[in-house]
Image 1: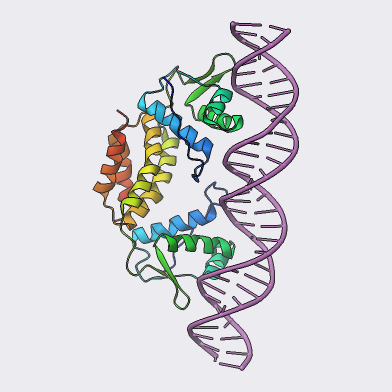
Image 2 (image 1 turned 135 degrees about the horizontal axis):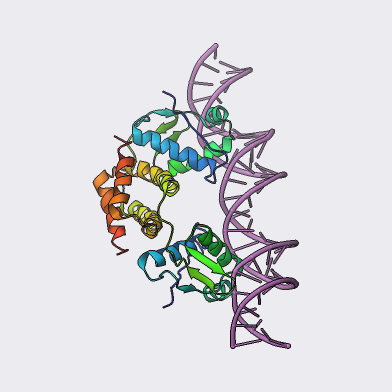
Length: 127
Length: 127
DNA sequence: TATCTGTTATATTATATGTATAACAGATAT
DNA sequence: ATATCTGTTATACATATAATATAACAGATA
C-alpha cells in the first residue's frame, strides 16, 4: 500500500511540513501501522519530485516527535511501540495553538456548538 | 483602557503574528469594542519596543481581514460594524488548520470527547 | 565489488522577518 | 502659519528559514 503524497508548492506551508502532516494523517487513519516501512529519503524525494534534504528534514522531525524510527539497517519505520501518548507538554502546545483559532472564531460569531461540531466531523475521518 | 501586549521575542511565532493574535483576543474578550481606538503605529511600536513597520504589518493584515479600519483622520479603530461573520471561505481555512491538529491528537490517543472538552474550556475564556 | 542505506558538509538561491532611516501628504493643535 | 501627529511608501540592511544542488562517508546488502 503506497501512501499518496499531495504537495502544494504554492502554499505558504513549507513542503517538509506538508509532508510531515500527511504522514501523520496516514498514521491517524491507520493506513500506516506500527512497524510499517516508509520509503527511503532518496526514493521518496524522487517519487514526489523534491530534494532529498527536504524529505530528510520531515523524517528527522517525525523521528524527534516520536512518530517514526530510523535504523541504519531496517530503514524508516512507523514507531512499532505506537506514538507517545498525549502528555502535559503536548496538551500545553495544543492549547496554545487552539487559543488564537478560537479567539478568531468567537470574533466571527461562531458559537461553541458550531465549533465543536466542526471538530467532531473532522474526528469522524479517523475511525 | 490599555490593551496589554505580551511579546515573546524568542518564539518561532513572528512578532507581527503575536501582535495580531493578541488584538484579536482583545476583541473576542470584549476588551476592545467596535469603534474603540487603537494606538498609532508609532506609539504602539515605541510602547512595546519594536519597529514601526512590524506594527504596521500587523495592522495591515488586521485591516485586510476585517478586524479594524484605518482612517487617515480618525486613526485606527476596531471595525464599528463588527467583524465579518464566518463564511464558507473562513470555514474552509479553519477546517484546513484543524485537520492536521486533530490527526496528531488521534495519533497520540486523544479521543473526541477529550479534544472537544479542551476546546470547550477555551471557549469559556470568551464569555 | 557494486549498490543502497542514513548522515553530514558546503554552497547557492529565494523568501520571510525585523530593524533603521527617510520622506510625503493629510489632518490637527497651538 | 508653524509644528506636530497621522498613515503610507520607499530604500536599505541583517538575519533566519526553505529548498535545492552536489558531494562525500560509513554501514549494510546483494
